[in-house]
Amino acid sequence: MQLSRPTILAMDLEGVLVPEVWIAVAERTGIEKLRLTTRDVADYDQLMRGRLALLRDHGLGLPDIQEVIAEMHPLPGAVEFVRKVRAIPNLQLIILSDTYYEFAAPLMAQIDWPVLFCNSLETDAGGNIVDYHLRQPDGKRHSVRAFVGLNFFVIAVGDSYNDTTMLAEAHVGILFRPSTNVRREFPQFPVVDEYAALEARIAAALEQSA
Amino acid sequence: MQLSRPTILAMDLEGVLVPEVWIAVAERTGIEKLRLTTRDVADYDQLMRGRLALLRDHGLGLPDIQEVIAEMHPLPGAVEFVRKVRAIPNLQLIILSDTYYEFAAPLMAQIDWPVLFCNSLETDAGGNIVDYHLRQPDGKRHSVRAFVGLNFFVIAVGDSYNDTTMLAEAHVGILFRPSTNVRREFPQFPVVDEYAALEARIAAALEQSA
Image (cartoon, rainbow over the protein chains, first blue to last red):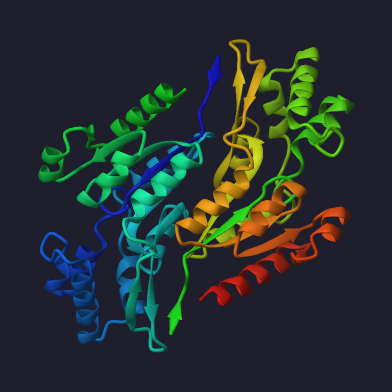
């Protein structure tokens, strides 16, 4: 008997399909302090307020940042990977990210607008980013839990600390190019470093789900 | 201040983006009894078992039905509509349907594989459809409720009785080309009959959500 269980592939964005956005913005604008991440500043709110202040101090509004991001490209192989997995009939790709729709748009256009669950920015009439709005705390984990509640088989793929709760919540969790720390601290998740290996892992998980 | 609230556009499939699949299969195979719908047979399980028995009696397996469905096309204007709404950065299109992944695939390929939440079929080694599996009862409504729980603003679009519970559950519910009965029985939902008017309704709902 052949039965394919309805499956959601929940994937992180930055580091998995596209480069880290803030690092690219730091490089392209020359504002070194934009390189700081949650590894350097533990409090996310403090980190984001610092970033928004830096942009304001340098006179950079949302359109300027969007121009910088528009010069970025998906990671080599990501476009083909996304195209392939989307064409698996019972596998639905949903990207779960802590980024913002306003930042992600130029990159989403390059991978043909997959579904993205993330957060939003607030701008003033002059295009300055005045605030950020998280859709909900620990959004990735909540999304995976909701998919499981809708009776989907869920495969989650990510690279960072902030992905590990969704990997744990999913039926199958896979680390893609994680840092040495994440790799060491979460030995329960298999690690892959190339899209071909990730495809093979996903195919194996689909077999297992049937 | 400009703030776009993260939004999900939950759309029905048959009658809204593509033709009714069973009616097309009835027409193309000449099996008139496949035209029966839930309007004729109230019990869905009885209806589906009847359909599967008819296919078996006529020696039609899943590959035969898929060939028939592959000759179908999205409704005129649907491809352009889907392309447009997917390119709205903070709007995520998710199709909620009572169809089966195995039937929908040839049509999904033609609208570039949007995310689809539906059901699955079970086949034997000879390709005969031996059973069907609903992911969950009243799946459309449960999905919309889950999206609301993830703090999305939800716009739902459908045409039939089986869409009205998700339309009620969403922040904004819109009927697209409903039957006269549905139109009359659910006066609380606005009705549109063209994609351009639907786009305008969606734009107005996005304004309202901000």
